[in-house]
Each structure stands twice: as C-alpha cells, then as structure tokens.
Length: 190
Image (cartoon, rainbow, N blue to C red; front, side):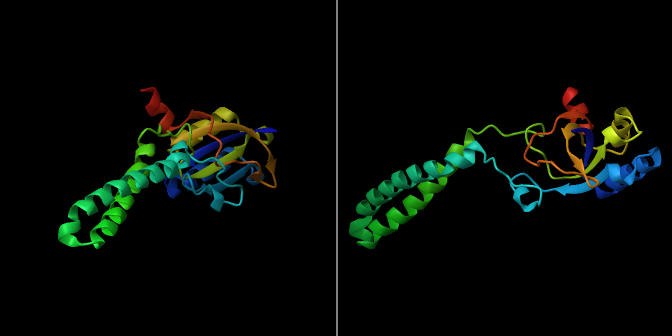
C-alpha cells in the first residue's frame, strides 16, 4: 500500500493547471494520473468498478409504489362507481387506472421523502480527479495538498491504495473520500 493524495476538480482547466504545477514541482509522470469520476449512480460505467450500493430510498420505493397503487386503485374504483350513472361502466375502469397510477407515483415518492440526502463526504461527486503517488515521489504530501488547493480543487483526499503502472489501481468510486482539504472542506469548517 502507498499513500495517495488526490484532488477533485470541476473545471478541466484547473485540472490541467494542477498537473502542470505538480510536474514542475518534481512529480514524475509514473506517479501522477488523471481520470474522470462519473456522477453518483453511474459509477458502473467506469472500468474500475460499479455502484454496488443503492440508496435506502431507492430500495423501498417499489414497496411504497405498490401500496400507493392499491390504495389509489381502490379510491378510483369508488369514484368510478359514483360516476356510473353519468359515464357508464367505463368510469369504473378509468377510475381504477387513474387512481392506481396516481397512487403508485405518490407512494413511490413518499418513501424517498424521509431519506437522508448524502453530502460530499458520503458520496463522491462527479469530478476530474488527479491522483499522486506520494509514497514513491520526492514531493511531500503537504506540497501536493497545497498545489491542489491553490489550483482550486473542491476536494483533496488521502487514501492508502495500490499504485500500479502509473495509476491508482484499486480506486473505488463508491467508497467515500477521506477528505483532508479543498474548497468544500474549508466551506464546511466556516
């Protein structure tokens, strides 16, 4: 295992500035890598591994939708029966369909209302990530952090990981970052 310091950027020009400054400071090419992290929920589109954690709200939305559909359909049938003298037998089917659809929508969304929304310390945001293998280089961890922050990294993290063939080999986009600096960390402290 080696120590890896990584900076997350939301603007490509800042990413390139950080890479240039790290190289100028003495970080060798084989100790520096850059890659794109997809938005949460789309990490399975990366070659490095998929999203294997679904949110609790997503797990329970189906149950809420089913319960809502049943209640809505029953209410719709009752409304259709009431409208039977005016609209005829089709009113019962229309009422059940509209009620079931509306109920499933409301029921599915209701289970998500109580879900705690994660912040940037729980879920890695979509970003361009620049990683440095600190364990093999001559540039110190503090210098890497300073360069990332001066170049506008919104997150700077430290990880213990595997560095192979010039890349962070065991990077896991689903694992929460261990934040040690960056714009988001400073704003959170204020």
